[in-house]
Amino acid sequence: MNTFPKTKAAPRDLSRRSAESEWLDGADASAQELALVLRDLARFNRVMLGHWPVIDWLRRATKDAGRERALTLVDVGCGYGDLLRAIRRWARKRGLTIRLIGLDLNRETVRIAQAVTDDADEIDYCVVDVFDFAPPAPIDLVVSSLVTHHMSDDLIVKFLRWMEGTARKGWLIYDLQRHPVPYYFIGVMGKLTRLHPMVIHDGRISVARSLTRTEWLMRIDEADIARNAVRLRWFLFRFAIGRLR
Ligand SMILES: C[S@@+](CC[C@H](N)C(=O)[O-])C[C@H]1O[C@@H](n2cnc3c(N)ncnc32)[C@H](O)[C@@H]1O
Image (cartoon, rainbow, N blue to C red):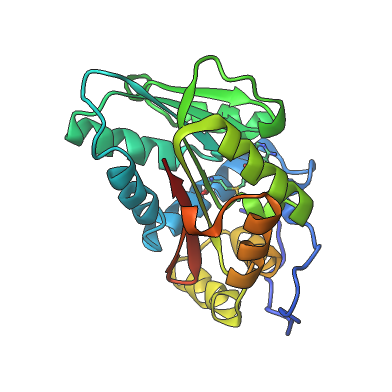
């Protein structure tokens, strides 16, 4: 049983980014409730084909990678670890040797991710703020899914710069588009798929906190990254913003 009230979508001004906090960012969640929310968020990502754009980008990023040299990939804000497990399944099918590291600043989230990850998946998790992360080895690829909307505009610029300086082969940001369609759609989908009310609650705030295409281009400029080096793809009201070297 969850203790959350049912949420109704209030009409909202989506012309600018919201500063409203998500429940997930608060410190008052019980471990049990957090596990349920993370599990349902992973389920929603799966239903929305959320891993596909990342795997598709990885396919391109690794197309010339030799099988013998291990690559290292970091997933920033890995949450439940479902993206890393999907990457492991994909890499196994491809015969690709890849070291996987998941970072998240929430200790309990990392504990939950570790608990649902099989040892055979060989994923290292680390409780750390990405900006304090000292990589144990050079990093080839950085991905991050549904994380940047948690950051301020200034932090997003800092994050872009961090990825530019850290990822030797490339990086990918995958996040929502601020738009009325996903804002209202999440309520309908949530009811149909019986999502935890907090996933619906946070989902709406996430959309309202997210960036538009124009705002992404502005952040890329502010990070001093050449626009033509970055590929910004739209996929079902989400953006995959990637850079390959
Ligand atoms: C909405 S969840 C997304 C989880 C997962 N990546 C997914 O796609 O479902 C955002 C996660 O990013 C983490 N996070 C936010 N800012 C972070 C930072 N500066 N460093 C590391 N993790 C961060 C949060 O703790 C949270 O678990």
